[in-house]
Length: 114
Image (cartoon, rainbow, N blue to C red; front, side, top):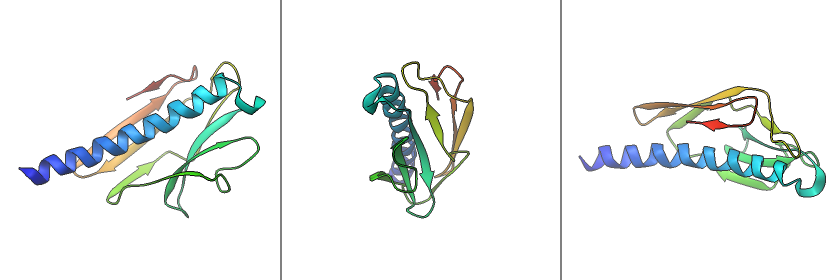
């Protein structure tokens, strides 16, 4: 029973981390921080989620968050939120691992649904 609890906790932590990173990127874009768009992506080379803006790319941004072992994602090549309005291109991210699957959807208005 304790292993099931740990697996559920690890998966939920990963899901909440991805949602938090997306929310932070959208918030920065809407607050017009540095007067540029902001985004988030998954960098497979660094095995990390990345917060970035127009002045630094996904590959060069120093704001990284390591991915948990045993959890994979698909569809997280990059989400960029527009300055001031937070709008973006609709997309979805699927997390899989620990015997669970979850889909995080970002609609064109920038709403993050999970």
